[in-house]
Amino acid sequence: MLYNWTACRLRRGVCLFLKPLLFKTVLLLIVVSCSQGQKDSSFNDTEIEINEDYEELSELREIFYDLYSPTEAHKLIQHLDITFDPDILNPTENQYQYISSGKNAVNLGVYGADLSYCHLFGQAQEAINYMTAIYRLADRLGVGGDIVSQTERAMERSVYDPDSLFAKAGDIYYQADNRLKENEREGAAALILAGGWVEALYIAASFYDENNPDPNLEKQILSQKYSLERLVALLSNFQNDEFTARYLFMLRQLKIVFDTVEILYEQDDLVIDREHRKITSASPEFVYSPGTITQITSKINSIRTDMVN
Image (cartoon, rainbow, N blue to C red; front, top):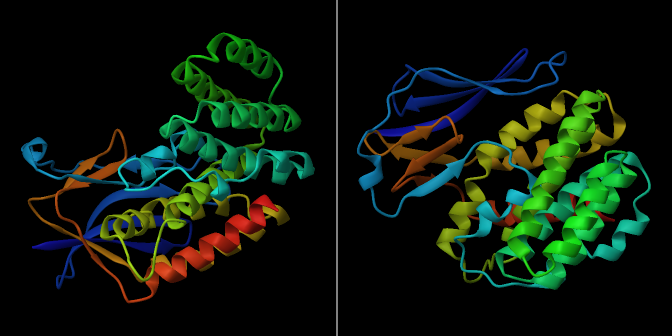
């Protein structure tokens, strides 16, 4: 039996369901709490059955439904047949044109995804350039302080150790997220996540060729349906902010396209990893109309262009 993840909007939140096709019964798996009054949008998991033999499945596909730090953007593209192309990244020189708090926040996320892409392909000098831009934006956003000074010292020691340098970048985002929330600036923290998510999808979409589509790339793009659902729910908490509302509107338009996509699973070929918030399956089936991915790439390009300019 095929199973389908779908979403229904409630008055105060979003619920994700897993339902057998052609049956009316549904099994509630996960609730995304995203009401206006609740700033910390998180998953509350219910008990589910897990196939104990899942480790024996071949060619597993992992579909994430969480929002990761921008420096984890490589998880979206690490298994794709793509190359390193510096021209698709947001130039580090653009950091000097970001003045508002919103622009600094969203591009702090963008640069994190760019750094992740550079590190994935072993581009040490590019990674250092993005690292420098990241701690400058963090400082400008008011969450730098000792984070910046520690990172500068780490860069001096880690210039020949890219992995150590990359780990320090992850620390920046972790500490920045904590400080923003401690100072009741959760909206800025959400914008950082939004910038990283958009940039990661933009990087992947940049390699999509409508005339010669890569099925693996198509599936990886379409699998972002669940993460987008979570991102929209998160940003909805801060829609009274004009800057956030702008990107929330754009992402909702993108979500309309994603909502036309169905992801189906066989009953015995489905694992929900609640700890890492991912769905694992050997053979998920993606059902979508011709031109859907072209629409997605077009809209994500528009959102990303607005963010970085």
